[in-house]
Length: 460
Image (cartoon, rainbow, N blue to C red; front, side):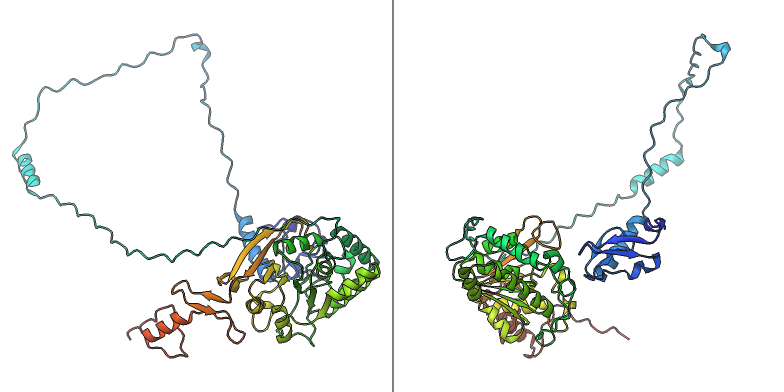
């Protein structure tokens, strides 16, 4: 099968869809080993134009891309045939059409053959054979109706607060949203511009965490920033109230933390970053912005804003995050996938932090957290951002708000209230149902209940 890209001359130049970096392909032999030097993304091996953050996704798409290319297009429907007219000989032009040939019907037979003795015997034998009776249709068995669990009471969500005025500072805030964007733009221009800062080798791509602070076994940390318009939407859907605390897990260059500290009446805004070079870039942005503020605005920034280098899932940091009112984490595009950590999955560690928070706290994530989806102690709300709200795509992105409504989760089968945590671990198995099943099947405390039946050994 001939691919489209083999017909083009080499070398070729392609652009990464993730970070827009241009790559040069010298020959077709390097296509299977091609990857972006900046963000580590991998393209389709057939160069259809799609890029993927992992090699597994690119390989899976390449197989399907090849199958689609191998399908032959269906032939176009041929036009209906028109009735052909035979050429007429010159001698027959103007002659009348030939007369139809007469239909000859045979005369009716007046003599009917009498049935013979053999025919009569065959008719008597056929009448003597009993016809098989049709089998009665089997009636379908009536299935026992299962009692549906009682529906959970619908909890009315609080209405969203009105959008803040872009040109007026909120009560207790130092800057209006528009004034903050202007000063942040000037501060980033002093550092070479936002694009230059975010695409620098110490910020962009999958970087290794600082070894002196990383305690969760995280292998690498992906980068993606949210723009100021999305920060306003996040705080609005989180119903952020004056006097509450805000924390950004994976704060990057710290712009979301700086915006929350200066444009809201929060008690404190904290950013936790595990990559040292990104933390140093955040400190440079903080210093450049501080020089553009007045004395009153500078005092507010110093009192409310904190940029920290640390692991969000260490014992001390996770205990601090559990005390915050609003948490934001960018876990989009597999940022916290299981292959990015050597031990417990980062999504599970993040769920443990959320379960230790007080009732009423909110966690805003950019991807679903399975352990919180299965737990009815959290109320889930989804909303979408506007266009060009993040740095990795121009399309709107979904966000999820997990609001903690109870310290226990209720079993849907026996309605037993189970605690969320036990020695900082998730409790996903109902204690009442487990004790009943163990006593029924005679299992010990250490044995687990399996949902599959054990197969009997085959006879020798």
